Structure formats: C-alpha cells, structure tokens
Image (cartoon, rainbow, N blue to C red; front, side, top):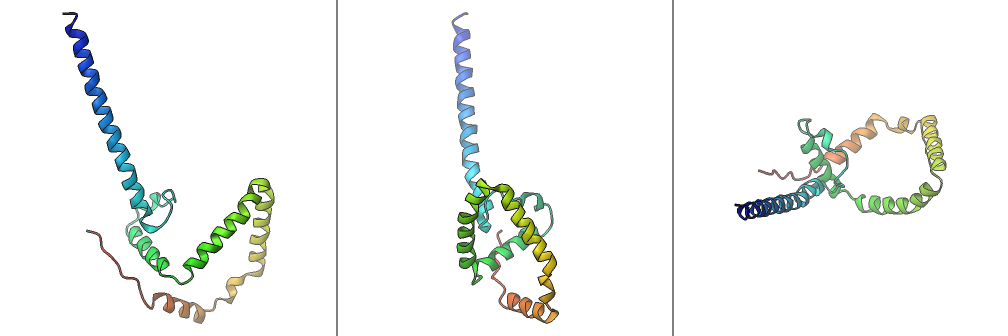
Length: 143
C-alpha cells in the first residue's frame, strides 16, 4: 500500500506537469497572434487604443486612417524626420529633462500667442478636405 501512494503521486505530478506545459505553449503561441493583430495598423502594440475598442466604428476609422497614411506622399518624409528628431532629442531629454519641458512650454506659449490657426480659412480647409477625400482608399472587409 505504501508503494502505490508514491506511484499515484508521481503520476499526478506528471499529469500536472504536462498540463502546465500545454498551457504555457498555448499562452506563448497566443501572444504573437495578439501582437500581430495590434500591429496590423502599423502602430506599436501598446499605443493606448485598447480603451477605444468599445466605441462603435472605431476600428473602421482607424483602418481608414491607416490606409490613408500608408499611401500618403509625405509618409516617408515624416518617418525620417521622426527618426532624426528622436535621435537628436533623446540624449537631451535624458541629460536635461527640465530644460526640455521648459522648451516645450515656451514653444506652446509661442504658438498660443501667435495663433497660426487663424491662417486656415474656410476656403483653404475645403480645398484640403476635397484633396484628402478625392481618392478614398480601398476598404478591405475581414469576414
């Protein structure tokens, strides 16, 4: 009777180990699929869009925006400028974070004081809107 007890315990431990391995494999295989779904729009996985998923139509709007941006003529220029700005600002931000915040405060104050949005007339906005909507991107529908 004492010999049967360790054999049952070993059998139960092997079953628990196999179950644990199976769960671990499922969890590891599910992570890349979830990350790929989030990266479908070309955005980083943790970009804060998760809270907006409950809003009806948000996914459609984000997909339209991603398709529009994918064929935008200035996408490459914006990407290069973004990389250069990160390379230039990141060391400064690490060494002098308070100076960076002060500079942002000054730039924001200068923009508020100069009010450049006054230059956007209704005619200009209409022209920009018609150009942006002139060739809407092809919409793919996932089943």
